[in-house]
Image (cartoon, rainbow, N blue to C red):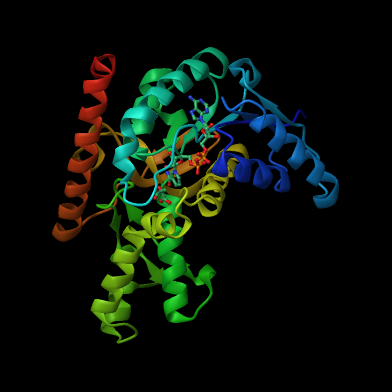
Length: 321
Ligand SMILES: NC(=O)C1=CN([C@@H]2O[C@H](COP(=O)(O)OP(=O)(O)OC[C@H]3O[C@@H](n4cnc5c(N)ncnc54)[C@H](O)[C@@H]3O)[C@@H](O)[C@H]2O)C=CC1
Ligand SMILES: O=C([O-])CC(=O)C(=O)O
């Protein structure tokens, strides 16, 4: 059977890491695309030269023309700019929206059947615009953020409780911004909800709230340390899990930005929710019960995403049609 084809649009920090992980996991042949001449070609050659050492077989190539993504099975989009210290993700909207228009046209022409995972920030608005620009079906266009935000929450909790990260589950919903919603009631250690662990005296409520806030600020924490860009290892690993679930029809239940059609009272907007990812892309959107406080946090997050979508429509009125 022919190998799957994975196209990476954007070959910067995340794009390069995606290519290496996709190679090591033998997910398929890999095409790196970028407008920076020589970068996708150089990274592709470097990764291809790691193949004999790591023992994986894959064709890894670099390109500066969209024709190279022809008939890709999976496309992961990181094209655009990352933020620097002092900036919010939302400050990237104007420049990255223009990039999404180009990427959308490339997808429409060369990879209309692909499963597309958008990573570019501000995530929820960019994946919404990308789906519109590309015209691809909504079940085939998702945004990566929830897996990353949940992984950060899991890591901080595992560190706090001194237990394996494998025994911690977490769900972070909502937009990928300061208003994201880490759900303590649906996050667990060994299956025990965090809210019960507070009652059992494992952790003080205030300490848990500090960890929740650190999760919300997880991206900025790394931006402030790196100074020249943003996180890339964990974001790449998170998108690879989503790609793998699609390619292997694993039907993982993962938090991802999906186009809602009435769920959570939202229609026509992308926002982070639990979804099932299988061979048909987003196969199901899970609508979990939220209490008043959780719903209020989600509503705040939705309002923030809505204002970004409105800003996109102001710049590109065709998106509103
Ligand atoms: N959704 C999430 O959870 C996360 C999102 N991000 C976002 O991902 C994006 C990429 O981050 P990095 O890889 O660290 O940035 P980077 O700057 O290392 O790479 C971006 C690449 O995009 C390329 N590019 C720019 N305009 C392009 C165009 N029109 N067509 C094709 N390629 C183009 C650049 O040449 C560069 O190589 C940023 O917007 C960042 O904010 C980063 C981390 C997590
Ligand atoms: O914080 C940023 O700008 C990058 C990002 O989205 C993250 O790491 O969560």
